[in-house]
Image 1: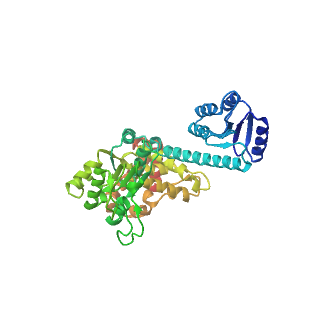
Image 2 (image 1 turned 120 degrees about the horizontal axis):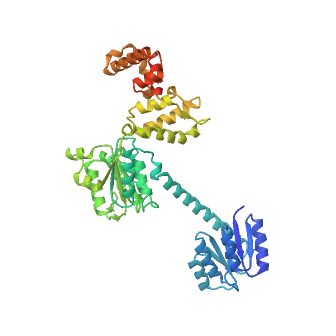
Image 3 (image 1 turned 90 degrees about the vertical axis):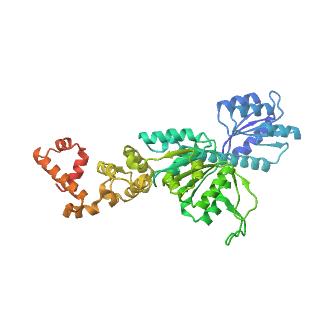
Length: 450
């Protein structure tokens, strides 16, 4: 079915003819000669389009149009009339009609208008769905974390999003700085405008300047056409300057001027262009230290750090690891032939591992494990070697005294073996005495080949 259409006209012959034509085109059609009945049907059922005559004996088509739009602002209303009047047509459009036709109209003409209207309706619905998905994707609830440190971040993001204040996000690589920046944007009044991001540390000054501010044709070798900069592209929205701490002093000066004057000048241009852009910057450097060492401009630092969000590293919020693991398992299930679950042994390893690559490293580990695991349960053998440390285990067992860590492991091995002997091999009792989880004890026993 192409869609549901309600036909309203006091000419019975026209209704019957038009309903047959539209049903043959694949539309579901309901007809009535009364505007009052039309309104009643519209409230009781669901219609995608209403085609109504303008002049009717009980209620005028314009009044019906107003009532329909009040009930459902998105309904498509096509007006038809035998009385050609510019004023009437303008009124119909002013009150929300999609279009109008004068009787007698051609069959191909009304078919084309209806087809075009439904096509635009689908595009509009797709755009709204995309916008909804974007907002849903970057809701605070979808930034995984129940730890106190992350809850504080959520509270700050919630407050900051409602303002136009410049924000600086500080955190190690892989902690989710861009995800937080998107959450700020998509929960702000700028959500319907562009979110544009750039990695400032990935480009040399000349290219970075061209990307940010644009250039005019012929301004430098290779500038074969005029290019709009990202500040202009993001006009009305948010520009995310990732790794701003990697920029040069010269680039910092240009960024400061743009933020102060709220205008940009393309490379090679003589005129400036006003822009309305919210800037969210991010860095993994300690910019306080960089300012003290005169590697970063103090005035720019104060300009971008009106509000600072410090993202915790993953090792500082390990209570979030099980939540993140489940999230990434669901995300990458489509890459496996069967759904995967994480074993308790793997979860214990995740809780012990320091995660130098933070959340990004955890996500990569889960993606890899889901793709490689042959069974439903993901086991330690399915994880990257750096997490299980299996590649070094044999060497450590042979030469454990060569390092402090080796000596600690040797002591741990002897302590577990001694306790096992003293309690007659009762693993639950051993775990209780050594204050370990039973799962962790089982893993240690297997690792040390006890």
